[in-house]
Length: 124
Image 1: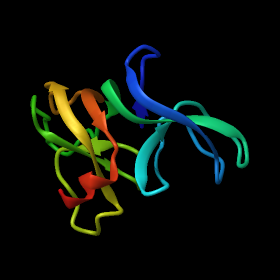
Image 2: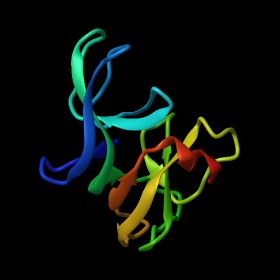
Image 3: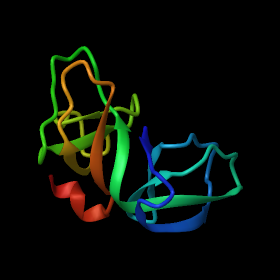
Image 4: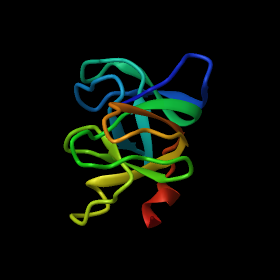
């Protein structure tokens, strides 16, 4: 999941949740990837963030993977965790969501990233 400090996000807007969602979940909304700010039920109005200077992302642990400053970070839609490795299944399964701002060791459970959820990231 991806979380934001109130003062750290740049682009956000209100949308109607198409289904029940969990805070920090990343989803495709109108051809753009965004993260939900709060838990909400289907049909409720909720804020989503499209870009943030700084966000905290839950990181995969137990894979022997550290994430270094400047590494591209991918969100796994299956488990809601980020990794520096893009999976081979499809572009929809692992979404490029930004770059690492502070190194995270192999045992760290989170990493600080610059969140960029725009659709143009699909090419990575």
